[in-house]
Length: 351
Ligand code: F0G
Picture 1 (tube, protein in one colour):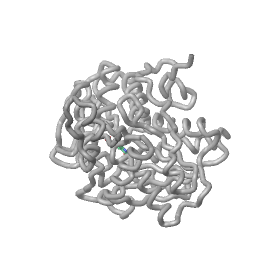
Picture 2 (cartoon, helix red, strand yellow; picture 1 turned 30 degrees about the vertical axis):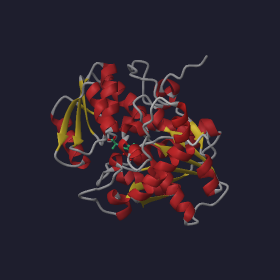
Picture 3 (cartoon, helix red, strand yellow; picture 1 turned 45 degrees about the vertical axis):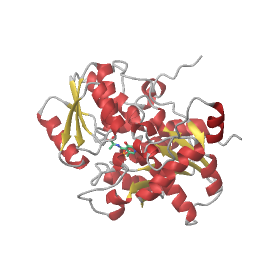
Picture 4 (cartoon, rainbow, N blue to C red; picture 1 turned 180 degrees about the horizontal axis):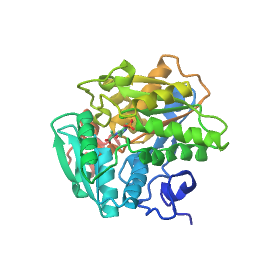
């Protein structure tokens, strides 16, 4: 029986590791590529969801973190630091535990989903809530890593991108070739950069016959790449992508342009609508930011901009359990009943 070994062992020959690299892993990667029935119907395409919430800490960040923490350990680091909107910190905290390292985390005060804060806490990270946004946290984290013996594990660290590119490998390995179109949410813009790198490497080596067009989606209130200028005070309910000055801005534009793709904005209303559709019609529970890819696909399809017959992959980046408040609010509430079969049957509409 085959046990998935984590992205470093599965893709060792395509990653910057040596036989001496201490592999710090939680078995990340190998996530489901699920056929999306409703999205396929609505677009006339063959649509798949790459369900990254199935990773060990519930987001795609684990792919990059296994690389970043392994590299930090190899370099002899005893402590790591990151800025985060929540998922990077949850992942860093967990992998730091595996490596026996101290993890420091800088998050924007009051803007972290409760599940993510719980993860950083339970893994024993040292957490600072910064009076500022993610971009301020990243500036602080960079400065601290330059002045103190603490390794920066944000996606400005190139080994993070190396780990995250394995998601593109998995898509090609599962489908037999690259899709026509790949959609994903864009925040700090590391992940679109990573997928594009992965797709290009497979195409260059002939594993795939082509690369997909890359479509990225920012939240309308936090859409610096779309607007062409930084957003000083980014706003969106999708807190994971509440970022006004993405570190990988230029690389994201390069992925967009070289692939013949686009980066556009979706409103919070479109994000929440796609979030509910994914949960109620596809059976896939994601966090709001993750739904930006599906929201972008639906908006483009409604505008007649999605050619039917294509093979399309939407990455859904994080697990819905991280931010459960959005699932509860606006949904029909449970009904209280006594221990009585007739009442229960009536309330359930059974007869
Ligand atoms: N989706 C989720 C669930 C995320 O957590 C993030 C980023 C993104 C999408 C955007 O990915 O930054 O590579 O463009 N979260 C980072 C964090 C910023 O700190 O957890 P990106």
